[in-house]
Image 1: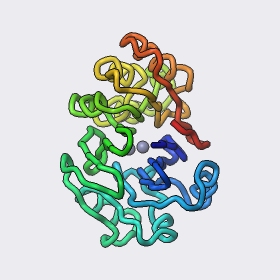
Image 2: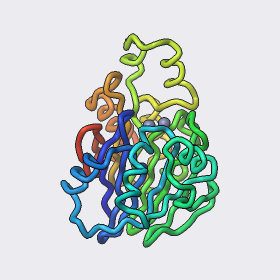
Image 3: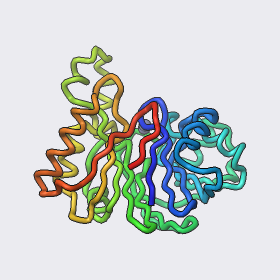
Length: 255
Ligand SMILES: [Zn+2]
Ligand SMILES: [Zn+2]
């Protein structure tokens, strides 16, 4: 089971979960040209998309959806009711493309079993996903508070993508508007390196094999700070053998 980030961050997000050429796209915040170019770096043309899973309606997660559906008209889009309605309004995609789910209600997509769970973030009704194929994959990229219900999902995963959005000190000295800083650090904003590391420390279990650090702020974080925070959290749990990758805005990274 492969997890590949085509892009990760506030300028666009798109993640592929694939096994044996069966694939899910998690979010579609990349334009068609870059999407195709980055896909071809890692995948052959015979990949089959069984669905798009949307986490929430922020533009960095949905801006490329309409173009993706133009090239892939038969691929259904999975979202909860409020996210689907917001995405129809914001992108102009047809409401008919959606398979609407309720948070906490699991469903099958192709060979994958998908468990959507609520996360705190300032969007319509944001979710993270636990995706079960040959491995169990945890995905949460925009999560303002490291809540217990997400932690329990993470504890069952062997692969995981977790937001490491910002370094607190870099954010507070960034010169950004105080209102924006308040939004980012707020309970429905984004996780700092320290908060994400605490989440790992609290919930990581021996089942975990690989962790990707995602949605890093380009102005208020650097990869080595996120990596240090994640590595020391894993070490504190005796999980030194876990592979850690940093997902990037501008290039393909495989977990
Ligand atoms: Zn985002
Ligand atoms: Zn967001």
